[in-house]
Length: 475
Image (tube, rainbow, N blue to C red):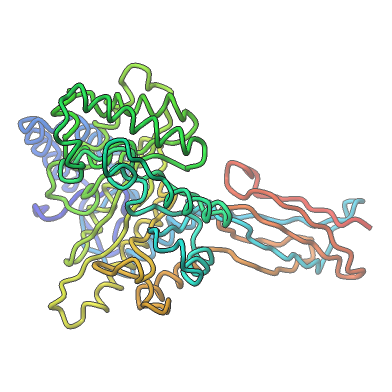
C-alpha cells in the first residue's frame, strides 16, 4: 500500500531499489487518484490539481518513466537526477568539425573556448549602502549579473510624504548596475500588504487612493521605462489585499494593465512567498499562484502582456521539503514563463550549535534543486555583503571576506559555467564539448602554421538545433 506521507512527484525519477508488481501498482495508483480527486473537488481546490493528476496518470499508464516516484531514494540518487536535468536543460552538446577550405579535416587543431555570458543569472540583493563604498561595488560587480534593490524602488522609500518624491538613491544604484552590465528588477511598483503603506496612503479615500496609486505607477514606471529586466507590479497579492479591499477585486489586474501600457516590452512579474517554501500555506500554493496569474492575463487589454513568475524563496530553519519544491517548480514551469527566485535565503534557529553548517547544507540542497529546473532563469541571493545586514544570511563578513555561505555560492558559480576551455580535434577533425548555454568566443588554431580563426555565437538548443558546428581554418 502507499502511505499518506508519500507524495506523487511529477518531475522525479524511479529509484533503482523500487520493485512493485505493475498490476498492483496501477490499481493502487488509480484508487489513490480517484480518492484524492474527490477530496479536492469537495474542497473547491480541484481544477488545476485535477489537470496535474490527469497528466501524471496518463504518463504513468504509458509506462514507468522519470515522472513517477512512490519510493524512498538516497541523496546520491537525488543528486544524480538533478545533474541529469542540468545536463539536459542547461547544457548543449556540440561537435566542432574543423576543416580547411578544401574540406580536409584538421587533426590536432586547438580550440580555445571562452564563455562570454551565461543564459542563467546569479544575482544579489543590493541596497543604497553600495553607493559610497568602492570595495562593495567591486565585490558586487565581480560576481553578479542581476540585482534586486531591497527597498530603494518601493513607494514608501521614494515618496514617504505626499508629493515629495526622491529617486536619488535608485538612480545612482541603477547607474552603477548599467556601467557593469548588471540587469535590475523593478521591485516593487506597489505592495498589497497594509503594513507597508505610508500613513498618509492608509488615510486616503478610495477615490484619492486610486489617484495616488496611479500617480505612483506613472512616476516610477515612466522614469525607468526600458531600463529594467522586469517589474514586480503588485508584491505579495496572494497573501494580502490592501488595494483590492479599497478599489475592487480587479485592482491588481488594472495596475498590471497600466504598467503594461507604459512599458510594454518589459516582463511583468507576480512576486510571492511560500509558493515553494511551505506546503501548508493555503494562500500561495502553486495552483493558486497560476490561477491569479491567469486572472491578471485575462483582464481586458492584458492579453499580449509579457509575464513572469517571481518566487521569493525564504526558507526556514527546518530541513527543506525538496519533494514539494520539485513539484511546485515543475507545475509552475508548465505555463512556459520565466521563473526568477527573487529573494532566496535560508533562516536558521540561532539556538542550534551547528546552525552555520546546516545553513550551508540546506542552501546547497535548494540551489541544486532550483538550478535543475531549466525554467528558473535567475537566482537572487538575499543578501550578499554584511554591510547590508545579516539578519538571515550573508555571503561575506564586514571585510567582504567569504562566509561559509559565500564559499558555497562561489563553488556553485564555478561548477555551473563552462568558463575557458581548450580542446584538440581528433583524426577526423572533430572535438566534442558539452557547454552551458550562453554566448561564446571560439578561436581555432592551425596545428602546423599557428594561423587562427575566431568566431562568436550563441549556444543553446534553439540557436544551434544541429549539434554539428563547422569551423574552417583559412590558409
